[in-house]
Amino acid sequence: MSHATEVFQPLQADDPPVVAGYRLAARLGAGGMGRVYLSHTQGGRPVAIKVVRPELADDPNFRRRFGREIKAARRVRGAYTAELIDADADGVPPWLATLYVPGPSLTEAVTRRGPLPVPAVLWLMAGVAEALQAIHAEGIVHRDLKPSNVLLAADGPRVIDFGIALAADGTSYTATGGTIGTPSFMAPEQASGGETTAAADVFALGQTAAFAALGRPLYGDGPAVNVLYRIVHSAPELSLLPESLRPLFARCLAADPAERATPAEVVQWCRQRLGADTDGSGGPAVWREVTGPEITVPAPVPEPTPVHPRPPVPAPAPANRQPQFGRPQPTPEERRARRRRTALIAAAGVSGGALLVVALAWSLMDAKDRLGDRNTTGSGTSATEPAARSSASAPGSSSGPSSESSEGQAGDGASGDAASPSDSPQVPRPEGFPLVMLDAKNSLSLDSSEPELKNRKGDIRFGCESSGCELTGDSTVFVQMFGAHGTTLDECRLLLNSAESHSWPLAAAAAGTEICMKDTEGNIGLYVIQTKSTALPDLAFLQGDLTIWRYAA
Image 1 (tube, one colour):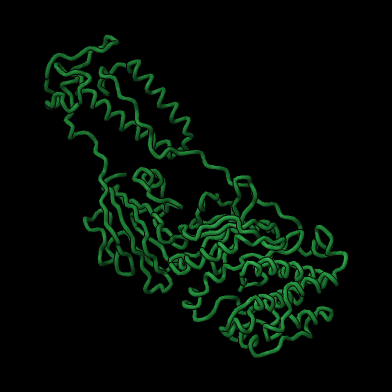
Image 2 (cartoon, one colour):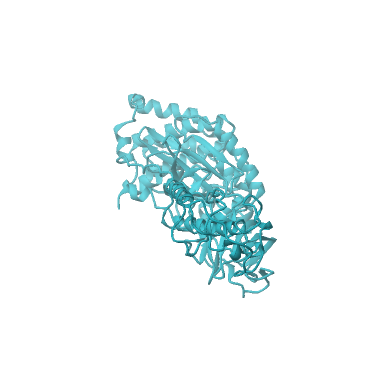
C-alpha cells in the first residue's frame, strides 16, 4: 500500500459527500473532535474539513465555546500554523476548514522511520515554538499539542487544532471524569486539573520533541492514570535524550510553569545551534529526508450534473387536443410540445434513474392535461372556460356533437368521455407529527394513523448495537439528506427511487439532520432530528418531527 493510499482513505457510506458546499474527496482521519476530510476551495486549493462528532454537536454549551474559539483561531497567522479559513459553529453538524498540509504527521513519520536525528529535532522545536508564539499572541492556549497535531511539510512543521480543544473541555470532562488533552503529552498542572496557561504548551512541546528524539513517549506507555501519575510526581528521564538537547529539554519540562522556557527562547536556542541551516528555504536536507517523498493530492471532486428536482410545468394544451387513446397520430401541436419536453430533459443532464422519474412525472402530467382538455371540447362549452364548467356526464354518455380539430380530424366524442374533477390525480397531503420519539422500546410505522408505537412492532426501529447507533427497517429504505433544510416530497421521492439501504448509521447525524424513508406501501416519511442522545447506548433515543405523505411513491 502506498503512502498516498494510507493518507487518503475513500469515503464510507456514513460520510457526507458535501459539507457546507465543500465537496469531499477523501477521508483523512478521525480524532476526539470528529472526522477530517480532504476537500478543495473554489480555486482548487486543498483544505482539510473537520466535522464535529454528533455527541459534541448536540451540546449547546459546546457550540458556544466552539464559536468563540474559531473566532480567535481565525486571527492566528503564522508561518508554522495551518491557517483556519472557514468554519460554522451553528452548522449541522459544526465544522471548520484549514489549509491542507501535504505531509505526514510527526506520529506517522516516527512510526515509519524511527527516531529523528538531532538537526531534525532542532528544526521541529524551532518551528513548533514559532507557531506557539503566533497562537499565544491571540490569547489562545493549544491544550492538546502532541505528535499527531504536528504535520511535517517540506518547509517545516505545521501546528494544527490550536485552541479547538478548549471548546470540548466541559463536555469531555463531564463525560469522562477527566480533563481535556492527551495523557502522555500533558503538563503536570493540566494533568492534576489545575490552571492551564501558555506554559502548558511549552511542556507539551518538550514531550512532543522528546517523542521525536526517542521514538516513544518520554513518560512511557500504559494506562492513562499511570502515565498521569508519573507526569505529576516524577522527574523526566533526561538521560534518555541526546546529550546536546538536554539543557533545552530541562527548561521545557520544568515542573514549575514559571521556570519553563518561553517559545521565543526555544526559537533562539534552536537557531543558534542550527546555524546557517535555518536560512534554507526548504529546511536542512535531513528534514526533507524525514518528511519523505511528496505525495500527490487527489484532484477536486467535479460538480455533479444538475438534476432538476421538479419537472418544468408544461404549457397549457390546445383546446382541440385529441383523446390519449385511439388517436391515429399526434397533432402538430403535440409533436412540438414533445420536442420541447425532450430538449428540456436532455439539457438537464439527468442520470439514468433520475431520468426515469422525470419521464414518469411528464407522462402523468401529460395524461392529466389530456383528461382536462376533454372537458373543453363538448357542445356548448367554450374552449377558454375552466374545465370544471364542462359537462360532468358519465363516461360513455353523449352531450352533443364532437368538435373538429384544426387538422380536420374528428374529436371522437371527446366530451362524452370527459372525466369529473374528482377523478384527476391528487397531490398527497402532508401529515405532521411533532416530537416523535424513537428509543429501545418505541418504533415507527408510516402506514399507521399514529406512527409512534409504544412497542417494537413498527417497521422503523432505532438501536445502538453498532457504533453511533442506526435506524433499521425490514421493509423501509432510508436516505439522509446531507446539508438539507426544508426537504420536499419531490426531493425525497427522487432519491428514494433508487434507495436500497434498510439500515442507516447515525454517526454523522445531529440536531437538524433530515432523513427520508419509504415503506413497501409507497408511504414516504421525512424525519427531522431535533434531539439525539447516544452517549449512553442503553438510554439512547431520538426525538424529531415526522411528516408523512400517504401512498406518494
